[in-house]
Length: 272
Image 1 (cartoon, rainbow, N blue to C red):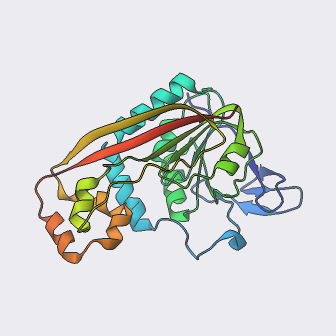
Image 2 (image 1 turned 60 degrees about the vertical axis):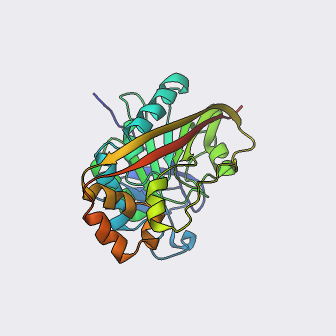
């Protein structure tokens, strides 16, 4: 039986502890944040927003959910969970930073841990909270996480901004940060359809400097699509969608089979 304990948040305005009273999270300074009917809490005050609706839009989120539900990234999930099982403190709190619709968050939920997911896009969090009710989801910015220092034993960042200072702050001593980023050939065949001179991903930049690199693994495998909807969902969930022409969309709709490569780099860091 999976038990979900109360969430532990800090007020984004004054950094005091938030307590859930009824359907509102309140701090000692009387700042209040309502718990939505889907179960999430919005901890992104309007003054922290840089646009009216930051983050991914709803159509991008739905496309990503449909794509991920087909299992195309399951090898990545398996690799992430293997590292978690090998290195993680399995009964300690875990954070998925930039969690999107919660696909990777819920994969890490067990009967003995608490899993948190944070994303700046309200539409993604709404979907995540409604679907995965045994995890804690909140709308928030990664540059100012609403959690206490040294709170998490494990933090994941999958295709999300990597903010080392803030991630290090919320990681406990001995805790781990797992990052997933694209390797050189990730979705290269799709890029070739869009760009005249498609470039490989640049993997020379290492965003983490202070934490100790414990493990680095490359995961590469072909994805074969025999349904044009899956290819269109893949396109829609990437930044490539903004560059795709109407003619290319029509071409993909009429494609009976398409193959492209998944190519990831997983890096595991530890706070010493």
